Image (cartoon, rainbow, N blue to C red; front, side, top):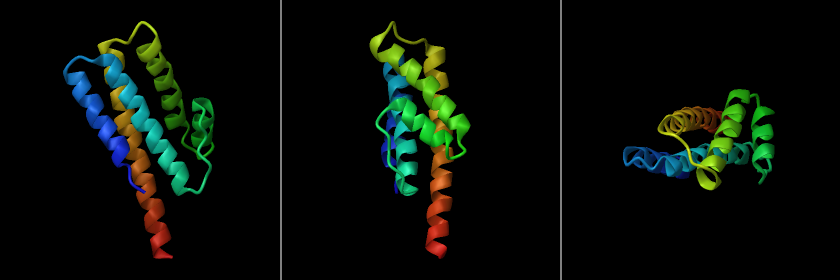
Length: 120
C-alpha cells in the first residue's frame, strides 16, 4: 500500500505554509495524517472508521497512542481552520510537523509489515 496521497497532501501543506495560507495548510496536514492512518488500518485488514474519533481510537488500539492524540489535536485545529476563526502561523506549522512525523512513522510501520509478509 502506498502513502502517495498522504505525501501529496504534505507537499500541498508545505506550499500553503510558504504562501501564508495557514488554514489550508492545517487542513491538508490533518488529512495527510488521517489518510496515512486509514492506509495503515487497510494494510492490517481492519475496517476504516469514517468518524474522526473512531479512527483515532482504532489507531490508539494499535499501540499508536501518540499518533491518535495528534490526530485528535489536529482535527480540532482543522475545524477551527475550516469553520471557525482560522489558525495562526504557529498552529499551522505545528500541524505540519505533526503530520510529517506521523506519516513518516506510519510509512515505516507499513514497510515493516509488508516486508514481514513478503518473507513468509
